[in-house]
Length: 91
Image 1 (cartoon, rainbow, N blue to C red):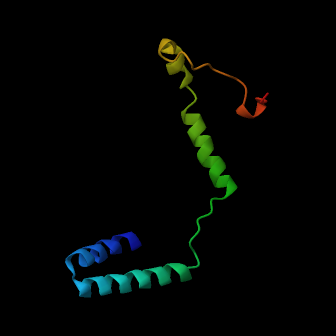
Image 2: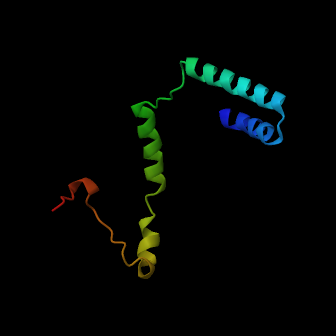
Image 3: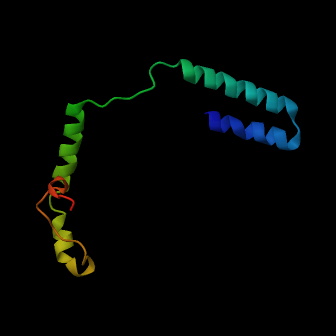
């Protein structure tokens, strides 16, 4: 919202429409104050909800390796691995 209000402010500055500049600055200031006093800004996702979403995603992609195995000549650098990335130890 603040970004949208800068458009008429910039237009007013370029064309010297001072009432538009003043109105835009006042609206920007009012939105800024409202935003700073807003208490419920954050969005938290609970662990069970994340597990449910990730489970659906992983189930929907179970057969995707077939595509890569079928077209392996186009993906020379791609190598299937049963290890997790966390098991790789840097030397």
